[in-house]
Image (cartoon, rainbow, N blue to C red; front, side):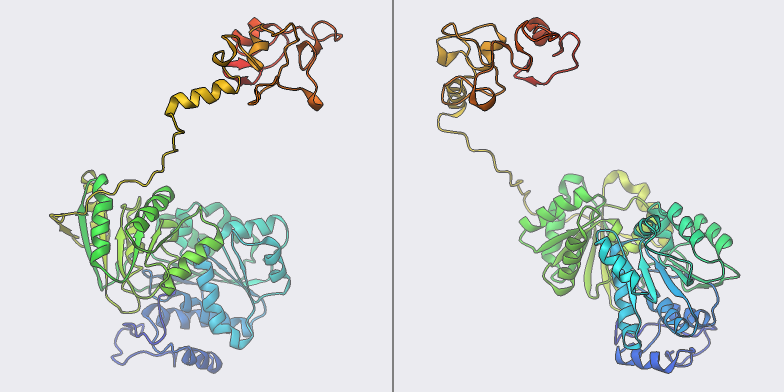
Length: 512
């Protein structure tokens, strides 16, 4: 996302490509006050997507921006939106696929717009709805939202989009991949047709082409690099490794690199498991995926940025929401399901003009997937042989339940003492079992209860009193008017059903 970092210079150029001078934000039509804010934030040189998209956005034109991740697309639409909202009545709406992206975009907007009095509201899943409603009622200039949560607010009529004049769809291809097409179409139907729309994406699938033709008006197409282009300074390597050897190979790699490492897992279950394994290897680690709460995801991401966690394990849902400078290595522990996600994963390193490295693990039967990735990036990935010596396999730390003294026999003895079998009662059943097997002691009526008592006394009924003879639910056998008689044969062997009754619960294989 907002890959441009303060004090970093990105390789840029004018739209014509003939200017040999280093580009700057001056001369792009940006207002002096915003230029001062950019200078104080130490943004000196625009990236290519910023250099071309900002002038078109300031003119109020619809824009299609195609650029790889980490190229500073956030500033490319944030600057035109802030400046135009200062002169044009209305509100801005920014849609993003994930919570992490929304939080980062809102942070950039605050950084640039707070000195100018910009008010924002962020509507994302996992956050308190009432707090979001309070933010909306304060009439923000810009709403940053994920499609699902925005639909929730539309359903509850807590948000109105009738005054939206500038709409931004960021990471549009990712939103479609995540199945947000119906939500996006509904949102587009609720915003005015007379608006400015800016769409940014790393790829240009057919779905986006149809969306552009339907919702954008004569858009300016800005294609900084062809779709599928990876960051220039990312060194890419591949290992073919069996599944059982992946943890050992990862452990060796984590020992060879000393900086921050981002590991991608294909599933959230795999991410959780891998986080536990990495911690057992002696590294500080956190996992981030859709099952984590918003607070947990923010803690993991902030901890990774601050150095609290050296290793971050993530799924593809967070691949475009991690904007951290200085990630030394990206590890694709599992290859992505879609080749496009490979580009976004490795785009987390080598940001802001720095060098980086990406190492991928592929199983022997995934060679076709590797070929598909190579066709997309138009580059052959270097395949490394497995190291001669890998760390010894680590045993899973599973704590077995401690057996009581005497082992299994002692456990059976405790069961006997509780009245669960015949052994401790001279071969006669006791407790619940006496009732169901037709046995009674001392001529007393059997007392029915779900659980035997450990002190050897007969189990009690309601208020500590024994149930009357017969069915504990229907009273004495044959005494209750209209009450069906208990048929032991049906209860024990007839699937737990009585005559005229539905299925019954079971305890120890017997209906109760």
